[in-house]
Amino acid sequence: MHFSYQPLGDSAVRIQIADKISSEVSQIIKNYCNLLERQQIKGVVEFIPAYNTITVFYKPEIIQYNELCVKLKQLPVKGSTSTVKTDTIIIPVIYGGDYGPDIEYVAYYNKISIDEVISIHTKPTYLVHAVGFAPGFPFLGGMSKRIATPRLKTPRTAVPEGSVGIAGIQTGIYPIKTPGGWRLIGRTFVRLYNPDKNPPTLLKPGDYVKFQKVKKA
Amino acid sequence: MIKKSSMPIQNQIMPVFEVISPGTLTTLQDTGRFGYQKYGITTSGAMDIYALCTANMLLKNNKTFAALEITATGFKIKALFKTAVAICGADLSAAIYDSKSNTIKKAPLWKSFVIQKDQVLSFENIVGGRYAYLAVQGGIYVKEVLGSKATYLQASLGGYEGRALKKGDIIYAYKPTTTYTALRLSPKAIPNYKNHLTARVILGPQHRHFTAAGLKTFLSSVYTVALSSSRMGYRLEGAKVEHKSPYREPTSEATAPGSIQVPPDGQPIILLADRQTIGGYAKIATVISVDLPAVAQLLPKSTISFKPVSLKEAQKLYIKQHRFFKKLEIAANAVF
Image (cartoon, rainbow over all chains, first blue to last red; front, top):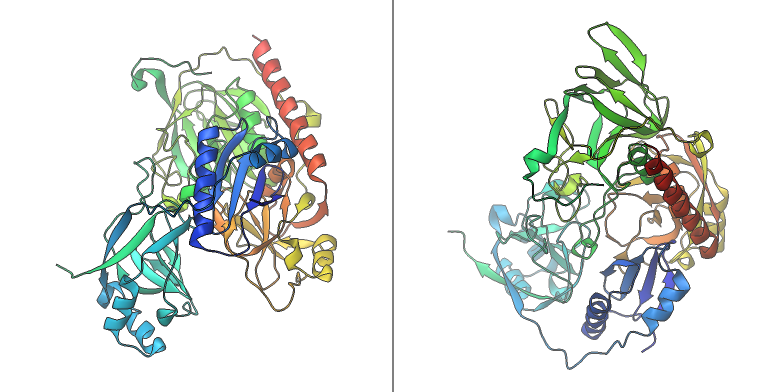
């Protein structure tokens, strides 16, 4: 497989796996990360997988750019091995009401009913392409364009923890209370970030997620 | 160095300071939290790693130990025991007040010294630089979270319950295992914080998202550090860096400390200690590691310009600094 390698500053290398985003690319990234984890190249500190890139952080006093690239290129990275689906993590969501104040707007904007928004949102199995922005925040792929809605013009100063939102064709879950401009359609009480646990987040890149509609007790 | 011991932690630590006034923003920082960026947990750590490491080494501490990162004015602490400390980084006109003799004297910078029980150490006003580091002989103690003592405020993680220091906090330190020696850093190794900096950068990885004119603007203009700058990053104001048209948002991917991202408004942002791990703006360049401390020490309204260097040159400078630290460590531990 041919990947492209580029420096990101003097202590990181950015590896581009493909131009496009797909579940196959995600599978290659997952395999690549597993190899990095297993091979423990001396001087490598950690790595961040994303949609179609992996960025590897290293210590130049131990290994330098060219030598690291040679070692990385030797990793026996395999392609999508008949995409073995890992367990799907179910996220129960209370849709609408106070928990999803923007669901009416999402319905109105897409000229569908609120029930349709919920059934479209709960239908796919979403792939976690990356975790970042905030601790445990998943970048999910696979949302239907039929519920795509632009971000708020002015972001909320505080979005409650567990809020499920839509921004353009993306959907995600806020693991901590933070300012944010996504349209909020519901909330989950599943904890996505817990610093007392290791790993500290529920979701990892490569996981699959499905939303399940639940009623407020 | 702290030796691994089966002794209960309360026998290995002692209270050294009480916080009288927390000041503008004081947090506990070390050299950072590594291994969790793939979960969205950024490294945090000292904004000025050079000053943090130096402060530790002047006390014969391991250079990665946690120290207090103090910014702007108003931080004031009272010593609960006779304690050896070192202050490095910004000059915030630290002063030692002795209530018994009712006298006040200037606290030294880039030099270890002893503060007596009941003396008060205060940081009065900004003379030069932005972040000062107060290290304590033996190292400041808090429980580690995910392998580090660094505070990550947005995630309420690490340090003192994930927050900035507040009035009444008691600062604990490990009981020293080394003998104290008054040490000072050689004057030629002491940085001189000015109100303009030329930072060296490695171009890319998304410099091709910009027009040739945009790239030229970036490398030839003087930018002003905005007031809204924080530990997350420094926003810059100045000549607009032109993106290629039509604007194409890159696929979100990892950022690095020092990465300079340019949003559609053309105003660069330098990402620093508490940066987001993944970002969706094009990165025009990354500040080289050895220049990051000087960037961090820029006060709002200071100016900055950028000069490209090769990766080879950047890594040569990095290794040179690493060797300097090694030498300093050996020298500090050679004196009794």
